[in-house]
Length: 315
Image (cartoon, rainbow, N blue to C red; front, side, top):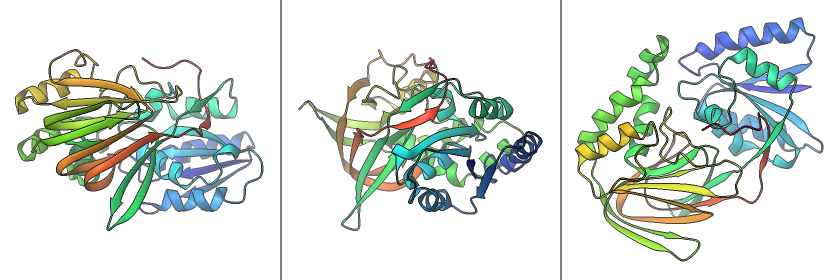
C-alpha cells in the first residue's frame, strides 16, 4: 500500500494533470494506493499528521508537488522512523529533487518509487524564531534564510507573474524578474552570526544569509554548491558589504556556484547557527514565509528521514 499526498495546485494546476497520468499507471498495474489532496496552504502538514500519528511499521509516503508541498508534509510527519519518503516533483523550481538526483519526469520518478534500487537518509533542518513571545519551529529539507533571498521567496508566493510563467513552463524566470523588483526595495542591515563551535562574525551590511541542506535553492541557485544532505551539517552562505549592483552580479553567478571565492561572500559549515539582525528581515523555510524576524536559530537534527533516491549526489 502506497500513500500519496498530492498538491493539485502545484505549478499553477499542472500537477493535477500529472496526477491523472500517474493514477492511470497505478490502476493499469493494479497497485494498491490511497490518495489525499491538499486544498489550501498548510493542508499538507495536517494530512501528514493525521496519516502518520498512529504508525507502528514502515509506510511509504509519496509527495506529489513542489518544494513547498515537501516542506508541509515534512512538518507534519509524526514518526519519521516509520516513514519511507517518495517524491514526484511537479513544482517550478524542484530544488529538493535536484539535490536528491531524482528524475524530473513524473513517470520515471514513479518507476523509481515502485521499483526502488536504493535508499538515502536525509538530514532535516530546523528553523526556530519567536512570534508574539512564542517559539515557532519550522523544519526544512532544502534551505532556510534571512534577507534578500527570503524577500524573493515571499514575493514568489503571491506573484501573478509566476502563475503566468508557470502556465507556459517558464516558471523559473519569475525568480529573475522578482529579484529585480525586490532589489529596489531591499535594505541591508547590521548582523551578528554565531556558530556552534564558538566562532562569531559581524557584518555591517548583510544582504542575506542562506542556510542550506541541499546544493540548490530558489529554482537552481547554488549558493552552497558543496552542501550535502546527509552529512549531519548545514552549509551557510552570507553575502554582505557589497553594492546592490554587485549583489545582483553575485546572485547571477550563484546559479553556477562561481561566487564563493569573491569578496563579500563568506561560507561556513556547521550543525547550529544563530543569526541576529539590527532590524527585522524576511525569513523563509523551503520558500515558505516565516515573515519578518530579527533573530533566528537553525539546527541540523540528529534524526534523519529515509527516502527512495539514487545514491549519487547531484553536483
